[in-house]
Length: 497
Ligand code: FDA
Image (cartoon, rainbow, N blue to C red; front, top):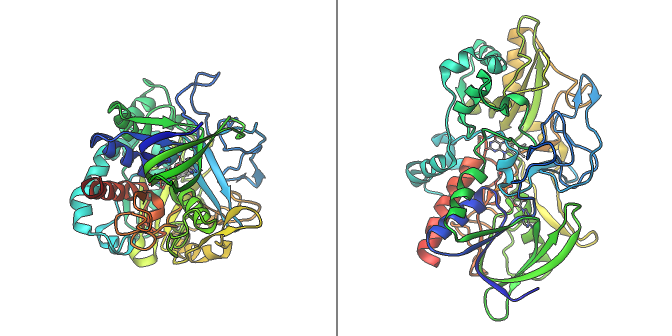
């Protein structure tokens, strides 16, 4: 097929892409969104759209024949299992020194993430996005993003009494006994719905172990917020199971976009060409960086500047568990939605989420995902021999993150007389230092693009996702990705369209 012409094509349906689609549609512009993952709108044979974390089936992983769980060991035993190869929801994308977890499907990362919706402390914003006016962000765009995402905070009285946050109350007690600030963290999960789950009056999702492979209820993913609003304008169409492989200037103006349609085995079934006046790269930090690095290196967009592919960071992610005493059980029922954190950013460079370990049995374990001020930045580059894009991150670059996380947990262990768990990431391995959930950068704002995401060498090409952010947000990233997209699209609509 060919010859189709669209005013705006958006690559990807995560946070950046959804903001762009909604605001452009509201401005009266027709938008076509291309998404490599599935639509995730149809129940499987079990009546559910998504499978539980404890029972992964073909829906769990993107084109793998074996699961690759982030917490891959339990009591020293590997927990991964064989699954049929399928266009599942969670991509564990392996680079040489790191596995980058990403959501695949309409809604991007919002389908698989914990929904923790955190606005960075204003004092830290200058180091997150140095070229962006903080007043505008905190007065206009963060509030706009939080409202549209449906962000809310747990009822503190309920937190104090419900069984499903026993693990977080233990986290609070240990943090406070060691003198660390304990903070509630907002989330996009519907907190009233979770109360009904606990009361037994609604179908369980957060209380049934659902999260990593999708939540069937309760979570306000982008499908229920920005994308629902965008569809309601009547101006937005979405093509799932379609992957953009190329963007290049078209002879008559605009850009020729090559799109491969695939089946659920991941095989290409049709190759399509569309001409778009404008293209928004919203394929996520990894997806956008891979496309731009390839297009520059292979001569399709040769004038992209030398910053393309640079400034990539892992948001300093590192995981660990602690073994509690028998008098500190963390509970056999654990909500999968984290609601709290330990803030040692200013003193130790670490912000630790008190995370669930929803195994269904008492483990006496406290589990944490830390976001740290890791200074290391990696670069994507084109590998002509393999025809793929490489990332030069090395596992040893996580050491600063481990050191920063230890400023919290060494102190808590000393105070409590406890030790680290060594059975969660391997046999006698303390740190989950092989992965990130928070890829950021690769097309950094005001470096690879102008200060609003324009790829200035190519009028009409824009970046509008996590690749704009230079490697770290000091907290979980999606509120910042959303707010920055709101800021940039407002400027682009006002001045370019
Ligand atoms: P995002 O990755 O959301 O979307 C990109 C989309 O583009 C994807 O749907 C992808 O399939 C598609 N795509 C890629 N290449 C393509 C191509 N060539 N053609 C077509 N489509 C293409 N953050 C947070 O703030 N709080 C949290 O609690 C968590 N928790 C969490 C848990 C887990 C397990 C993960 C994996 C991630 C998180 N995150 C998180 C991170 C958060 O989800 C992430 O930062 C955002 O989803 C990134 O938003 P983007 O818009 O940049 O891309």
